[in-house]
Amino acid sequence: ESFKEFHVNHVRDNFRVIMQMALVMTFGSAMPVVKIGRMAGQFAKPRSDPNEVIDGVSLPSYRGDNVNQEEFTPEARRNNPFLMVKAYHQSAQTLNILRAFSTGGFADISRLHAWNLDFVENTEEGSRYRRLAAKVDESLRFMKAIGVDTSKPEFTSVDFYTAHECLLLPYEQALTRQDSTTGKWYDCSSHMLWVGERTRDLDGAHLEFTRGIGNPLGVKISDKCTPEELIRIIETMNPQNIPGKLSIIVRMGAEKLRKNLPGLIRAVQREGKAVVWISDPVHGNTRKTENGFKTRDFDNIRSELRAFFDVHDEMGSHPGGVHLELTGEDVTECTGGVSAVTDDTLRHRYNTACDPRLNGSQALELAFLIAERMRLRTGLPPL
Image 1 (spheres, rainbow, N blue to C red):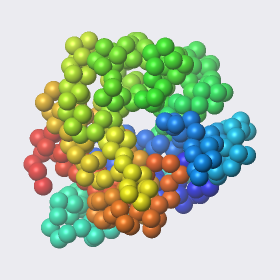
Image 2 (cartoon, rainbow, N blue to C red):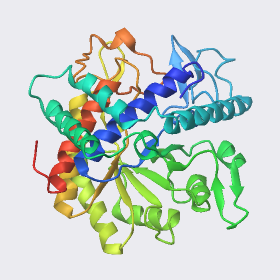
Image 3 (cartoon, rainbow, N blue to C red):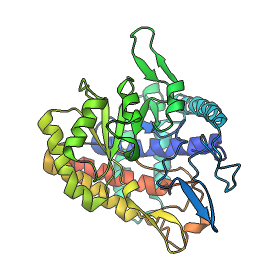
């Protein structure tokens, strides 16, 4: 998130894409899908390098709009704590907008399906996307034919949650409150928080902070994480082994995932730990083009998702979710997919302040592919 991109239309478009994806995946899996938006607080950005050098000039790296500013000047790159206050106010506004959209009829199931049909129109005749969309259409028609009232709140409103990385601890600490009825502590900056790959040190402040709050939590792991380390992280973040409390968000790249994930799953199964396994197929697939753009290839993202499902099939475990960086806008930041973005066309609408995001069409295409895979897992016939 950034201050300059904040607009009700931007929030609306992101919400819409997530809802469209959820509808497709709910139908494909015949299971409820929990909708969580990385919104209303995702400002801070972990950076690999503390400094950025341009034309021989070295300045502190841009660390997100709630820390410093993107412009490459000494004044803009100076840390400014008052930016956290601005981020708080924008997050509160974003939550209000999300409440309005999630309960005010914008999430009507018929409207979501109509938007999905718009996407399908741009795919090949007889494609898997068209077949799945036709099935959803038949189901909606059948419900209406037997008298199901699709104008009821169950079909027009939705539970929608927010999440962001627990990175800037002064911000998170300032918004932590004790519940007066249970005595438990909650970080009220978000529903769910996760700890990133760079800050999940066992003796670090981030795990110590999350250990004391009652929010649902996540932790990102790469191929660097050993089975022994993962078990210690789980025992630190979820000592009571509460089901649903902790999600393991896997970011490795397809080949490393096939090699390393089975050992991690085996350790969790052996120790009887309750976790939700989530795939993050974007962060391990970032590359830089010859003309200097940071991007991600749709085919590589799809390959990692396929590997994630394959491993869970082999291990008898459950693939519980997917974590994506996306936007509802028609950007050209990731290559491939039905939108056919190439290295040469990245520059057309490359708007990101940091990492490349899937556009709406690419995200929805992934949702259709996930839905198709989930149909197979639940024993439903392939399309």
